[in-house]
Each structure stands twice: as structure tokens, then as C-alpha cells.
Length: 424
Image (cartoon, rainbow, N blue to C red; front, top):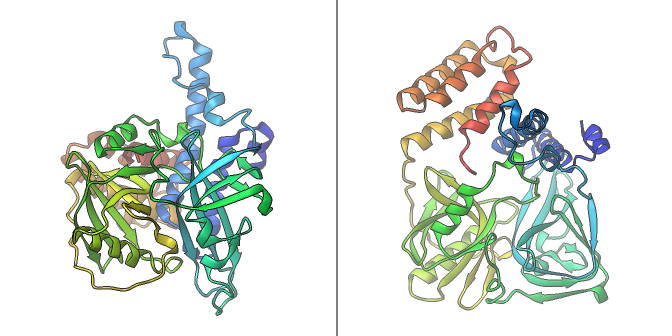
């Protein structure tokens, strides 16, 4: 399918296929980057993009007299026809928004790597510089990740920098390449004022403004596929509470904006960035004690159960910039945090998405009667809760599974995913 998309010049279809293939590879190699939900989302996005393009073509062919409304977006734009695969940039200014690092551990085909997120202040776009290295089984990486050189600089330095370069190339999906020639690239430390010029649709002053932006966004299957999606910067007024969830290995923090609205941070411990949780805990501890206040936070966002959640990559305090992934570990005591139970509708939606991800991983043909019955019970619970349309779609997706899925079964499951998924 990748070759068909490439031959047709469908850039966003190609990017969807690449994202799907990457998740399948990560699953087969037991990579730390594999996430069943991301695999499900990649497959559903590809299915949704093709279906939306077909619908747009049908609406365009029928015209106003055909009884169908005109498509909001033409099929050409949905598929990415004519989008250049890669362009050279003569002059580019970049501001780091943080980084993610991963380490697959000790097994064959293990890798370690980094993805650095940059903002382009001229366009308010987000670009990603990625690198990965093989990791020999049973052996630690010969060079720590923060010392690995990326674009001629130690990764730890580059991830906490402002960059001005004349040696950059940008792919259609936002992946970035920077040449290693020192005379063509200047790297400066990320100052506490580096994000001051960022504005919507990248940076927002309040939770309400960011939530409105997310609510108005088109579904992912209609948008260009980007290497990093839904990455934003949010202004912060105060830290309300924070703590450690030992069961989930996650640090949670409730932040307040200038209007008193909440944003929940979730920072998961990972072997690729072992100091990230401690670095965030230290910032929160100091801020709540009246010290160096947190002013902005950058990370990937989503809305769950009506609440705004963020996985932070970097924070700005009054005095400095902190990229969590590159901070050295500095353990300290952390209070316990009890995660509030999600709203009933959000809990049901989360259960449904988890079910879809599990069935995708196991295969529709491998579901036993007990699994089918659990799905029917979930549909009944959704119907009782008022989520009637979602319940009907789950029941429709179950048709034919018990006796062997027909050719439309998979399509019905992906439609169920798109219907059951919130804006993010």
C-alpha cells in the first residue's frame, strides 16, 4: 500500500501508512514506543482518510443538484495530493519545546532514540528532529542518550536550545533534518523568554482558549499527518496539587490558569528519560513552596471526560527553561496522589477504546464467546447511559465476528473507533 500511495502522490496517505508500519514494527520488536492505542488510532485514521476522500469525491460528482451537500474539504486536500515530500529551507529559526527519549531495554533488535520538538515562530508550526540507534542485547548504550550527537551537537544541548540554521530540510509530515556543518547552524541556550513570541494556534493563555481550539479542530483523518500532533504551550498561574501514583508509575499535577481553570499534567516514568519525573517533581515542589514559579508548560494535549490533560515535555519558570527528558535524576520524596475517577461517560468511552485496541492486537478471528459477550455487555451499558448511537455501532461491529469476520467487519470496527473517540 505504501508504494500505491507514493505512486499516486498521496502524501498524507503515505504518512498514515508509515505511522501504521512504525507501530507494527514497534510491536514486533517489543519496543518501548509501542502503544496499542496508537496502533488503533493509526489504522482508524488511515481508514477514515480514505473513506472521507471517497465521500468528498461522491459529493463533488453529485453537485448541488445531486441532493448531497458539498464536501467541506476536497479529496485532493484530504489525501495530500501534490504535497512536496521534502523541501529545503534557506533560513529557519527554531525554538525547542522539549524532547522525548526511549530505550527498549535488553532484547534483540532493541533501540534507543530521541525526538526533539521544535516550534517555528514564523509559522507557529511544530517540527520534529528524530534519531535512533541500535542497542546491543545485554549491554548499556556505549554513550548516554543526552550525549549522543544530533546535527553536530550533543542531544541534551540541542533539546534545550534555540536554533538558527541554513542547512535544514523539512518533510511533509514535519520531520526535520539539520546538517552538521557548524558554520551553517547556530545553537543558543533556551532562555526563560524563548516562548514569549509564541501565539495561537500553538500557544494559549488560558485553558478555555485551548479547549475551544481543540473542540473546533477537524478529525485527525482530515488533517495532514504530522510527526508530533496536538503539541501546545499553555500559560500557568499556579500549582494546585501534585503527587505520585505508584501503581501507574505516573506523576500527576493539577495546574491553574489565570481564570482558575484546571489542566492536569501526567508524566510517566520511562527508562529512556529516568530523570524526567524527578525533575518535574522538583519544579512543582519549589513552586508550591513559593519559590521559582512555573509560568508555561509545553506538551501533547487531549481532552478526556471534559478535562484538559497534558503530557509535559518542557516547562518555563521565571528563571529558566527545563526540558524534562534531559534533566539528571535527583530523587526526592513525593506525596501520594489519588487519581479521581473519570466521569461515567468518559469511563465507558475509555473501556470501549481499550476493547478495540485489545481486539486489534489479538485479531478479530481469535475472539472467543466470552470476549464477544463482554463487548455486548459494554454496548448494553452504553445504551443505558444514553450513548445509544455508540452502542448500536458496537453491536453492528460484532456482526459476523463469531462465525468468522466478513469483509466489512474491520471497517465497522474502525468506524466505531472514530465515533467513540473524543476530539483528541
